[in-house]
Length: 341
Image (cartoon, rainbow, N blue to C red):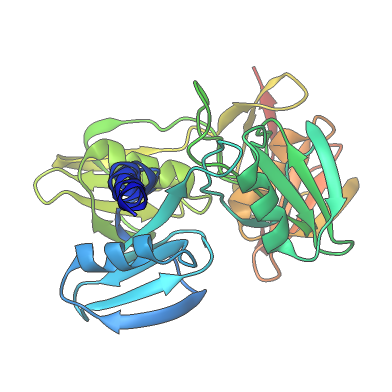
């Protein structure tokens, strides 16, 4: 009897020692000014962000949370959706060590594929099963799920995203040793200029308070819609713009724009022009619908065959051309061509 009691006491001490190690095996991120809309399975009132995070941490079903300070509401989510800017939100995801040692936070990018470096594939029941399989394996850095066939592809490397309407892809955001986060598909690429004491007024589609100039630039860099930015130093306001307007003096501002020069798959350094109200009809070798002008330009930039493009603003159609034809007036169009150095 005494031996049994001693053994039970030993197990209790062991649990107390092991439990903190197990608890530390998962971390919750904390992203201010963002929300992850959807996939809520529970919500409740609390006046404390830590209480919201704790509830997610203790619930095995919870993969992400959002806390709204103004409403004092906590939302627990069973899926990690993409982050969207929200002035009032604080969101985060659970970073867990899976059985295979891989860290589990996965992005989800509908309509894209990351081709190549498949080390295995199988027929899955749904997207969640494909994501869970990638989470469990330390070798898996990215996945692609074919919504038409149900095929799941696990990848040992995070390749560049390519447009494919029937696919959903994603990657582990915390990466591996020495791995950096890949660019957002359709993110516009290129570097951002930085002009101190200047502003580019107008065409703001979003504004928010940022911690620094670098944060403002990063938001523009990751948003495919953003063509230019302005950061106000005194108020730390960041303005994202969908068009590059002319620069004006403003001692309190820093502005810049996407330089739009990037190495395409053809190896030539190509700069794309942008001509509003103009079309270059003919010689289309591909056409498709895109989200915005920047995505159309990116498709042309990435294709060695593409020499020119036309984007129709009302229908959001993108036409890729293998020849630069003469310009013709079209109020609804934006066209351009590759200028190679």
